[in-house]
Amino acid sequence: MVHDLSRTFPYHTARKSARPIDLLLRDVPMVYDFDVTSDWHQLCLYNGQSTTEPTIVKVPLSGDRADGALGLDPEGNYYLYDFWNDIFPGKLKGTDTLTQKLRGGEARMLSVQEVPQFIATNRHVMQGYLDIVKKPEWSGWKKHLKGTSKVVANDAYELVLACNGRTPVSVSASTGEAVRGWKDLANGIAVLILTTATTTEVQWSVQFE
View 1 (cartoon, rainbow, N blue to C red):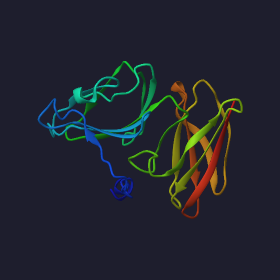
View 2 (view 1 turned 30 degrees about the vertical axis):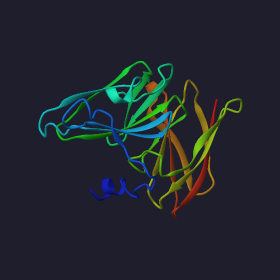
View 3 (view 1 turned 45 degrees about the horizontal axis):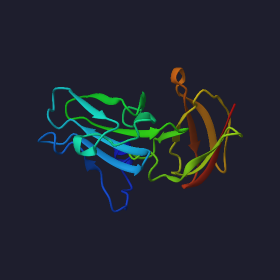
């Protein structure tokens, strides 16, 4: 329980909050959207209708947000990541509808990002919004991804990465230890794990081939 609560701190200080985009569609909203950027959304789905029965929640990726859609680019492609269940739900087209089955009383936190290398982190429910100092940069011709993260001492920090047909061959960190592994090998979803003895900012990199 302490670990789970620690994933909700600190609270962000931006003067905006998640919008209940299905407010006009049902008595109790179930879909809350926080747009980090135009191509990166943090989506909270909440089954508040029942504490015992599962509920199907559907969210169109593109379309008018007043109609319960995310308003994303219909020409885009998007990766999802489920924070609390620590799984990769898949990749969707901008014209697709996100469909999730929520347990009774469940709140599910999803990262929705237009096909990048970086998808999510395990440090906070906002999956990188607060702990990524600067959104990771991809050097196409070098096949190199680099970024900087705020890492807590003795707390394994995970960056979930999409390989997009490539293979991570080496990793490095400015301090502490960096280890590469897989979250979902079949779908090419890798993980970079950083550990440090002190709480600090860590510059990290991943080399692909």
